[in-house]
Length: 163
Image (cartoon, rainbow, N blue to C red):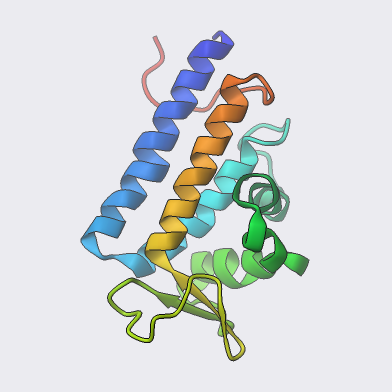
């Protein structure tokens, strides 16, 4: 399949699955489960940044860190020092559905104290689902730009109907 087709398939995947399905959770107010999936989605996005197959084993931390560094950037990059976000968000939520005790996960309605996303409250990092979702959508858009500009080689992902 030519690059244009691979890019279109990736764009459909990102918009329908990552942005679309997570958006449905956000709209439904299911922020707790949304955090589980957003942690996994960061790793998936990082998988588009390397040259290995999407199903390559043992790439989780590297891919998560790559997405944080190149697609999310800013404060996320600083906070993932020593894989902090990978361990406390992605691993803890994926494997136990319980965030690391260093995280305070909130949705907009629960944020009655007016905390800011990624601020420190004592020894906890505040994460607000709606802001995190918007940042993840921006990361998807950045990935699409890199693919469309030819700065990243698209991958053949098993998604959608192949003709």
